[in-house]
Image 1 (cartoon, helix red, strand yellow):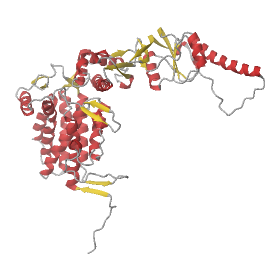
Image 2 (cartoon, helix red, strand yellow; image 1 turned 60 degrees about the vertical axis):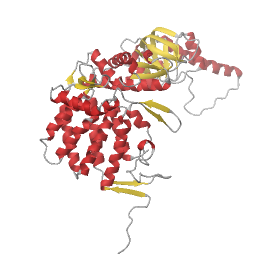
Image 3 (tube, rainbow, N blue to C red; image 1 turned 180 degrees about the horizontal axis):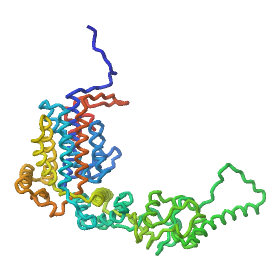
Image 4 (cartoon, rainbow, N blue to C red; image 1 turned 90 degrees about the horizontal axis):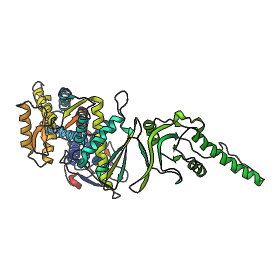
Length: 544
């Protein structure tokens, strides 16, 4: 007999069958365990330090996962779950990853019982379909005009994060901001809510500006600092003398001709300013540059001007003020001007900024986030971003469910009943899915320092015996209470998206029975022993 035949190069590693599945499941579970302690109002924070020494302190699941230097391909797939959740609904990222990790753990138990991965996947698909149906049945239709309810939803998203101590004030700001930018079809573009961060004072000083805050200052100190009843012109062309389109050479032999040339340039700039003034504008926002001489003429005309403003800010100004963006000054008319009650330059945290505020019907607004330090401001901004997402979902869908683990316990209970009607080994997978959902109330209890088993048993009793579908765990009191009555509610979409993303990612990992990994250029490869739990934070070698 001849020796062994090598099909692949020496530096390629291959993991097959049970080894590949075990390796991927372990990687996914470790990612879920990493963020598990951050879940809920009593969740802990993580400090992340990058290779440059920059620090991020947060309990936002997606931020933690984005900042982690993860190399394992299966772990990266779970991080994509969090990113998708963040993009679609803004909140529930930690829940999505924890559920995915628990589904993988339950799948591993079934694999140990010799249940084929295909059977597990089929069972999970049946369970997911049933869960989506149960969730829709449990959801409550709400009046999207009810600002008090929207405020409660925002407060639920903020609770347990850096902005919690001012959650009432911030929730009110968020509801005002989101309801301002709703379009005619009831849809919300959250990009129209600008978040500007400035450290220096307490979180409670966070404010909503019914207009746009621009991180720029006047181009000339002689210009007015404050303009009331502002008429705003938006230009995306420079107020400068353009160079010729083609390479040209001008020969001047007479000194008087030189003077005429300079005077002509000055006249052109003056004419530009006159056209702006003739339109009735008293505030000019320019995306490009403004010549020094033009600045002088604008100041003499009493026009407040700012230059090199970001394109995104210009576009938001059109929504806030009703102005049109003009590409040629000659085309500027009074009809193109936007309106604002006040445009003023103010100093914020040592920087001069332009406030365009008191707009009549702004379809773009700004939240000025304050906090004592840079890290506090960043964490408050993340909490606000999450809350904007959930309030937007509620307004668009008009459906909510109770929080505090109420939904997961009720869904798990109904899913177990459904499992009895499923034949074959898929039944085991459906029951495993039901058990996996209960990881949310169990984790909430653990993070609050409560007895997880006792809390879960009490919750099941309330749901099964008394039929209280909205009862969940109030981690602040340590009691099982009616979450809907307490105002702890979430949009339906947060739950449906989280469970769907978690299930699909778990299924994808379970389908993999062969991992072929080439060594990276410059060294480093797939972990040789995924069973080991060495390395930083219990990570297997090569995981991070």
